[in-house]
Amino acid sequence: MNERKRRSLAKAISWRIVASLTTMVLVWVFTGNLIISFGVGLTEAIVKMALYFAHERAWNSIKWGVR
Image (cartoon, rainbow, N blue to C red; front, side, top):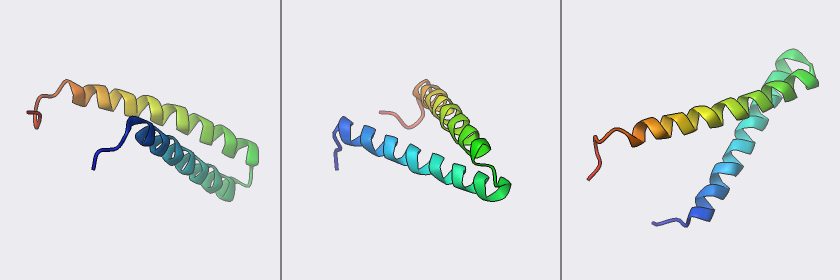
């Protein structure tokens, strides 16, 4: 199945929202501090997007498995 780029982008954004909200809820449950949970959630979202981008760029330079 070939997805359109817009669908893939929507899925990536919706997943990032779900994952970050999960992190925020877990931090809130463990700390009881809503402000800390938002800070951790925001930081987590930014750091993970940057790491994902770097990961993709690194894999882009590896020729293994590409025809």
